Length: 349
Image (cartoon, rainbow, N blue to C red; front, side):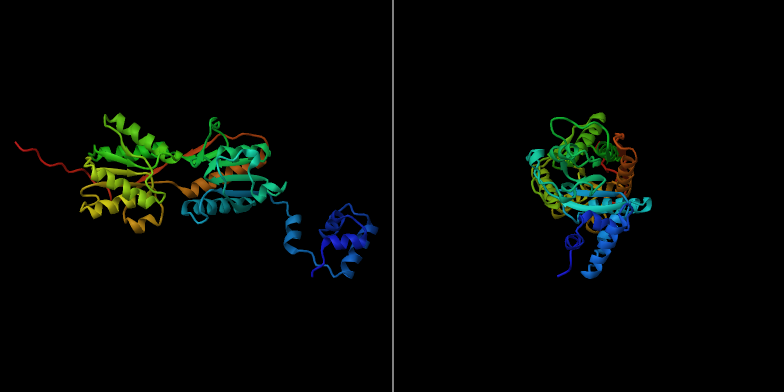
């Protein structure tokens, strides 16, 4: 069994902190104590942990990326994390990743916080990504640890957060833009599909609804979640719209996988996308293009999101106690092959 630093301290009759300072060649150690420690290290054949020693000697600040209530390999969040790491590496900061799952019903004081928050001084600043609720954010604030919050996947409680220390993208504006595009193509019977019990889908539905009302059109949404699986939800929602015989010439889906489910439902009814129904997705996820080649979609630039989160976290470190105005990034409408100009039947004279 390897010798421990505690055994070295006991043999040299000094505190473990003194042994640590000797190992890391730090000043302020009495020469006689240093000699005793070095002799004990040699007699016990003690080998310091190289990683721990390197960490202790480093003055590099640590930014902890905490991904809450989201699958570790979710492509969007992986992209954001990768971008955070790249930016921080360029700026000379270390990123420490951890996942964290918790219930929104647990009081802040009762949360079993991730280990990175259980030990003081491990992380200098936090990036709270994934899906978060007010109780965890409150617990972090109670610890007085600086943090930056991913805005769009945060569900506020009774008290809304002030527009500071957050980075996000314009869900409302992006959805409104996609809807106006469909209206410009001549569509009037446009449906929105997305579970509005989630804050991000609700924001997209509100943007869609405003664009529809501005054009004098009635918003139409299948906004109740029929499945936790995005594809299955899109498929089931489209089935309901078709089963009821509602008029539909275009669909705005709250996510690319929802668009794929809706497209599959239309195909199984003999309806062609975009000849019969135009379909627009959301997020522009890479893997979605393998499912629905040429999907028109609203793009969230996850690289820019990650870089702005990292930039704000570093600014928080450089200006302790300063609250920074939120950053909301614009969306980009990517026009591809699942939308087309609505062709109306000629009137009979």
